[in-house]
Amino acid sequence: MDPAVVRGFDGEAERGDGEDQAGWVEEQVKKVFWTFFISMAGLILAQVLDPVTAQQMSG
Image 1 (cartoon, helix red, strand yellow):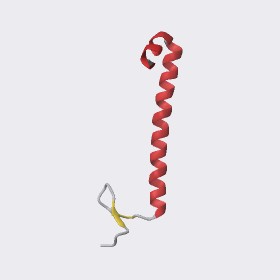
Image 2 (cartoon, rainbow, N blue to C red):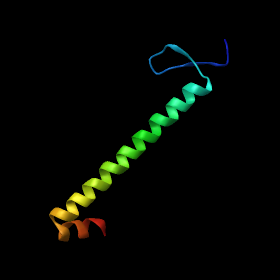
Image 3 (cartoon, helix red, strand yellow):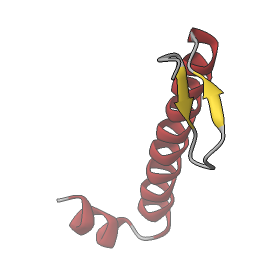
């Protein structure tokens, strides 16, 4: 078996070259960014709507 061939989550063989890795890393960065962004937006919205409760939640 060719060591450069990697099995994907769907079971199909995929090439494990640098371009695939860069795409995977980019997707992970996007997921982390949007998770952080939505979390921060929620905290800011809570602070605007109900400052006392938001202050208790954040510590």
